[in-house]
Length: 214
Image 1 (cartoon, rainbow, N blue to C red):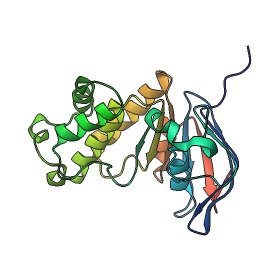
Image 2: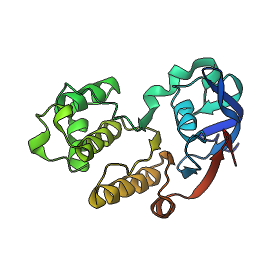
Image 3: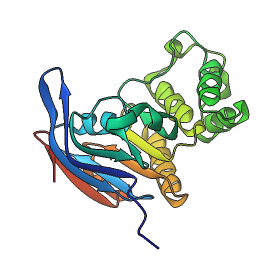
Image 4: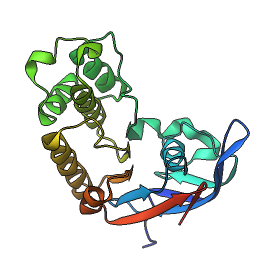
């Protein structure tokens, strides 16, 4: 039996933001079920790697495959199979917590019960479910954003500074979710500056600097 394809395969991948080469030839392979930490200085290209893998930024040269999908041919095809939590929540500020979760659950083709279960798993207090997202604290919004991603049952988790805005309990909860996702066969690629905490959940580090991974 041939070996399984990696969940993420980038080879000499180049991505531009405007005319600026945000990625200048990245090589990266991440196997299914792996938890991989991207680390490096600000502006190094970590967020761009995540956005490339999400199909949000086009690769203009080199190879780029995610979950077996050639991103240079059809980067939209992978989006329903991945979940991303970035610096922005990705939530609709005027909609309530429940409305947001139901929207993202339906968009992913799962039931609203899955969305509610995700809110419970993220320990989002029931009292805030009827509130619009703009009325939540930063920590509450972060938990709801994770719940929206979890409800999608993604095969690939892409997390940009996942512990930002969370209290100690929330950070521990996220670490537990990452471990559970990996154990269930999902792949996790995340960027973090909090190396001591990140190393506790990551299987390995990849350094990104100057738009190049090593």
